[in-house]
Image 1 (cartoon, rainbow over the protein chains, first blue to last red):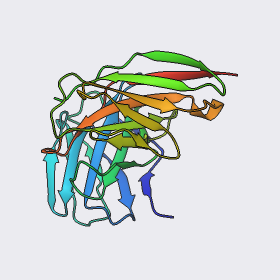
Image 2 (cartoon, rainbow over the protein chains, first blue to last red):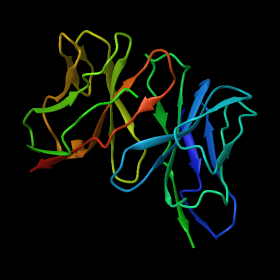
Image 3 (cartoon, rainbow over the protein chains, first blue to last red):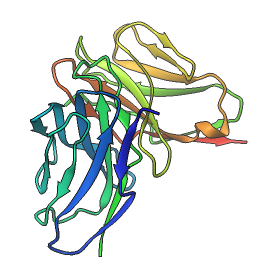
Length: 114
Length: 110
C-alpha cells in the first residue's frame, strides 16, 4: 500500500544529544513537510521541501535541520540546540505545491527527553 | 497568516447529523478551505476541501458561505468512529503551507 512511514514510533533523547527522525513515502509526491504538535495544540510547521535538494524553513525551524537527497525521504534532525524537543512529530507529503492537493500524514514519532 | 476560528468542542448524538462551523473572515480569493480529522496519537487524515462551491464526498459535505468568510463541515450521520479533533485549514495558493489551529474536539454520544 502507498503511504508515509515514520520511524521510530517512540524516541528518547538525552540532554545534548542529536536525534534523527525518519520519514519515507512511496506516493511519488514532490512535496514533503515536518510538523510539531504539542499537547492540546494544533500543528506547527518546522520545515518543508517542494522538490529534491530544496527545502524551506517553516514557522519554528530553530533547533532543527533537514535534508532531501531523495524524493522519497525527508529526515528531520532534532539538534541539541532545540531546548524543548518533547513533542509529537508528524511528517506529511503532497503531490506538489498546488493548493488543491491534500496532504497525507504519517502516524508520527513521539519524542521525549530522558 | 491565514487564520481560522473553530469552537473548542462539540457534542453530537450517534446517528444524528453534525455541523462543524469554521470562520475565516480574512480568507483571500485564492485560498482553499481544507478539513482534516485527527484521532489520538495518529496523524491527521484528509476529509474534504473546496474553493467556492459546496462539495460532497463519501465522508462528508462541505458547505461554503457565499462570501467565503465561513464554512461548515457536515457529517450526515455521526458514528462513534467520528469522534476526533476536526481542523479547518486555509491553504494559500501562493504559498505552500497549511495553517492548523487547535480544531474542534467532537464527542459522539451513544
